[in-house]
Image (cartoon, rainbow, N blue to C red; front, side):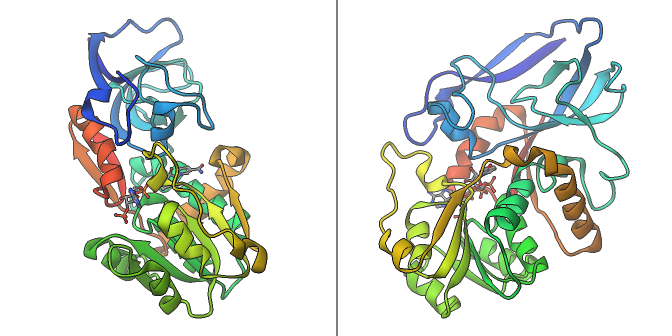
Length: 332
Ligand SMILES: NC(=O)c1ccc[n+]([C@@H]2O[C@H](COP(=O)([O-])OP(=O)(O)OC[C@H]3O[C@@H](n4cnc5c(N)ncnc54)[C@H](OP(=O)(O)O)[C@@H]3O)[C@@H](O)[C@H]2O)c1
């Protein structure tokens, strides 16, 4: 049986290019005793992977020739003691069409959870790392109190959309920032944000001030750069800035950095980043809460599925061109 994988061919310079990735086809090794064979069906593309293509991040840099890492959902073709044949499973299979595994780090998807309004691919989206980042970033670092005002950047993306909706569940007034008519309509009409700002139109600092004249208590930052500065200028005293991601900085040779630091003093602001894996022991409780909100109709999620293993690099690069609308997955 032939298997395919995308590997890192060279380190990107700025925005990644298709030539930074190489598709390799090889003969699939026969699984050894105790090993399972998985046919990967869906693979995620994640902006956070960009940093590891160039150097060390919170995990070590990916080596040249190594498979691009990502989450995936697949079906067990040949089972073992942990993974029954025919089961749907999720794991960090990377950009690869097959995985051979002893079962460690691979989870069998419980059909009682992953059915009806919860797709199998939700396990690598709203119930996976993006949804968990929203949950722990907001509830732990954001320290939300009912009636406070929450501002979320990239509010139509998988982390942002989940943050907006959890914020509503916690009784916050929520303002989303997104780019373009379709995304802003989604944040307002489907996610039920109280106000939406299109970052492509007008002066962002003034637009935030108009949406929240009393100021922002919590800024959930997925983007960094100009949007972060605009948020800082609108923070209330004792405001909290949760640093989830910095998409606008990932391709920059030199970071733009934060221009407005004095408000941290005058307004006693706090800014803190998270690595979602630090909350691993609490993943179960967060997943139960998010699944409950989905089943009750209080929380929705949007997946954008692109067909074709060969499209993986373009699907990934598109994240930095504002092209994705929801959790972007590639179906093999
Ligand atoms: N800390 C953690 O443990 C952790 C875990 C997972 C993810 N994250 C981070 O969470 C953030 C959100 O991740 P996600 O998976 O939900 O992806 P995402 O928000 O959908 O990221 C892509 C979106 O970011 C916006 N964007 C892209 N380039 C931009 C630029 N130069 N300037 C401003 N906005 C830009 C675009 O939205 P618009 O079209 O609306 O502008 C684009 O569609 C990322 O920064 C990611 O690294 C952190």
